[in-house]
Length: 194
Image 1 (tube, one colour):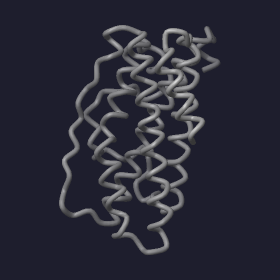
Image 2 (image 1 turned 90 degrees about the horizontal axis):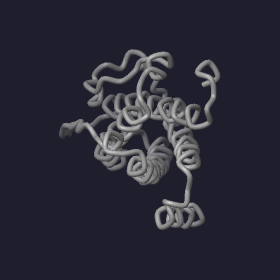
Image 3 (image 1 turned 120 degrees about the horizontal axis):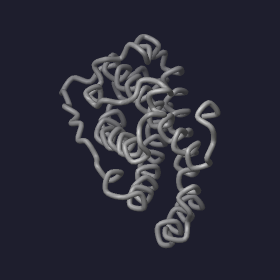
């Protein structure tokens, strides 16, 4: 972990020296880790109650995003990056709420949830930092972030935690997909190869 932070610091201080393709590749790797963590956690906690395709009540649902690869391939690089950054930003508060709500779960799940959410928060922050650098190199359109407010309720039970985790899994999949499309384009791959 310390090496990763040092590496990130080097990228920040010398971001002009790091090619955009490398930044996109690193962001794609980081988003893949984030999505893997969210998938693992929802599977461990049995969050299949809210399948990804059927989660409509997420606080991020109002953001118009491509629904499949073909649609994502039609969106500009700047817009894909803006969408990924907007989704990522929208999860900063809910991840804090999730982190502080582990005490409502059965004791056996508390430790797993707490540790994994902490990792998800760290990966989210690292990815956000990397995407901020990338967006600064891609111009004003990529720097646009749509605000998606999270309205916290006083009641956060196991059902709410399960729903939030399912929503995060859905959104982390979108972020990962958008960054993979960007990576394919940066590598000049044919769309069918993405």
